[in-house]
Image (cartoon, rainbow, N blue to C red; front, side):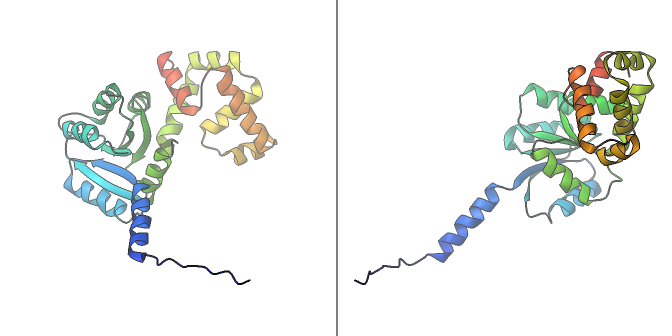
Length: 237
């Protein structure tokens, strides 16, 4: 017996529209904030070429950035560090009070350790220096949107170095960690990858991860950023 099948006509324009709508809904909605026209154009030029990023607004002041974050609710806000009316730290503090779900990235010409630590404490999920290669901005936005953190390595390593050079911090950490855990943390602070640390200490990468995990666990922390905040709270930096 021959079975008969009926083929329904496909509305290809509707199908394409559905695919396009799904794609757009998955794009990362980004708000940019910079008081420099040149800097703003540069950011827009860089991010405008990324298919998975949608620029939803631009602010030219700290107050306007706050207003647009509340109104547009972007996934990620890229904030220039300095504004005439408010700096990025003041914006971060006010954003945190609103319980906004927008994740923030700071773009700065320079930052000292204190400013960096304060930005992290206030909820910044990424920090980039303006001298970094352009592709790093889109990469930072993607990682922050995914729930990760992305920090400029030089600032990060200087902050850790300052922490471990402190006599008080040295005693505090040495009392809690084994010599091998402390050695692992020191090398991580120096900017070495897990693979490089493993080679330096003649251990496996798995053992490196274990030492780092136990170090954070003993200090009651959840990673390198929390270690920096711990140091700041205890007056170790």
